Image 1 (tube, rainbow, N blue to C red):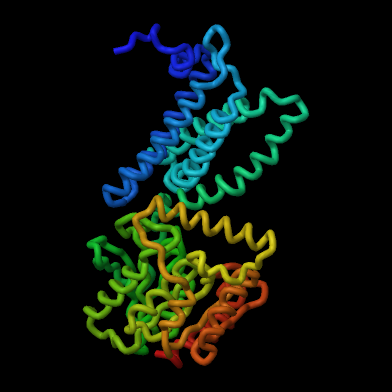
Image 2: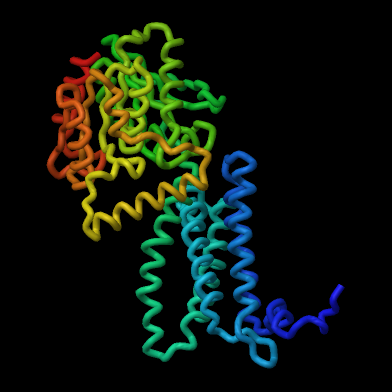
Length: 429
């Protein structure tokens, strides 16, 4: 074994810890951020080989950042002198990775779960990540002239736009906080449980109706059946049997939520299977109504389950990159496409859920089954739903209430919503 004093001076400098307390604290912060990110991967419900592979990537990034920092320019006393570009760039990247994921996967739980372990861990990881990113900025820009250091501002704006925002979306999607159910059972509703295909128990309300028709109601991402009480009340008032259920990972349902709704189609099929076991349910007169992410799942789920005879989808617009055909090729369109596609791609790395097919392909597979699309007064929803309607104008209807917010048509136009939705379902089921 080679004695330390026999090593070349450059190698001894590379592996000598800096004596400056600030730089040592930065190295500790880098290790902490790396451990947090690796922990998220281990915590994800991924196959073991994927956990190992993705954790190895994180370990490589952390090791590279550490070596870059330790290999920085040193004074005679051994202290790290700020100004190593590689160390700075990697620290900014690693700090940004931690900031994006800790806010999405950890800190977002604070308003929902309170001071839970995941929220507090996320807060600690966020502080460590901000410290590392700040240190990286110092290493990268301190050698520059004072006015030249202003270049840090546009660089950080780019980091936020192209790195932090997609990471935040991915962390939130794969590690969404558990939203509790806050409402008591509605009048006449039965509290029910049914198994998903993987054994996860899903919870819901089944409210018997009088007209022989049944509608399954699906809320959006991060929402429970609380959020569809208004729509369900209209259906019940008009004689429909209604099954509202909490998506996996929220309310009283088990499992882990995937905020983008990837894989929820299987749970919708399980809900149809459950209805088939209930007395008095006419399986030739079952439809589905979904809001936001639930609307996308309603379209995709009905495409693969022919027992769903009609679809009402309010607020559906995109779930994969292939859905973004309506964005132009100008700078704004390319930026919008990047933000969404990067978020979906990173979420796929953090989640066991597989990326679904496009909504257009699902709409094509609906064949002749009637579909009612409801779009908010926004460019994205208008363009997306117009595109879906063009696939089959004879079977796909579109209502675009002026001034309505996302999934807010019932509240903006209560009588019109009831007239259109009930009229559509009465004619379709």
